[in-house]
Figure 1 (cartoon, rainbow, N blue to C red):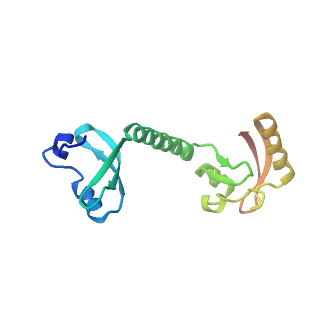
Figure 2: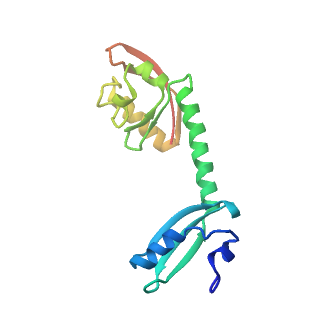
Figure 3: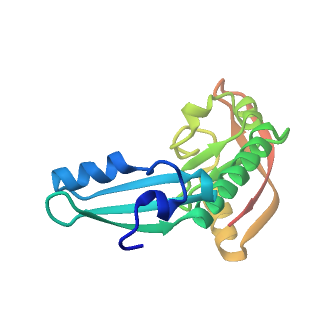
Amino acid sequence: VVGKLATEAYGTPEAPYLAEFSAVASSGQASRLEVYFPPLHRHFSIGIAPLGPGFFATIFLDVSEQRRHEEALRSSEERFRKVFNFAPDPLTISSPDGLLVSCNEAFCKVAGYTEAELVGHNPTDIGLWIDPDQRNAMYAETARKGEINGLEAKLRRKDGRVGIMRISARR
């Protein structure tokens, strides 16, 4: 929108972001803004480039759709987190190499550990699996078949008690 005042271009009584634009024109240092512009109900990424003393150019990128997707993802992650954390069954998420990435409260109660004591550790290294070969076989079968269902395994709680747990896993 070359040659128009910002108030004309934006349809607002005052020029938005003029302080930021002026700072670039004065300093000669390029800048970027991420803003929500209420009159248009849009999110913009604005690149501001100096064009010499007292002058600047702006490039606006409408990122509204990206922001909507990010919000939808955050909302979905929050719903998953609630379902995962409050599920009555013990649940874990592990990395392909076996490190615990996440576990719910029910798993912590069954294992006798806090989440902080479990996450980032290999269950065999902290002594959960009584038979590490059984754990390795479970991982191998899951890799081969894509899932296992109802594997009975002896696991050791933090207090040393042993219990049998039915394990299902999916890649």
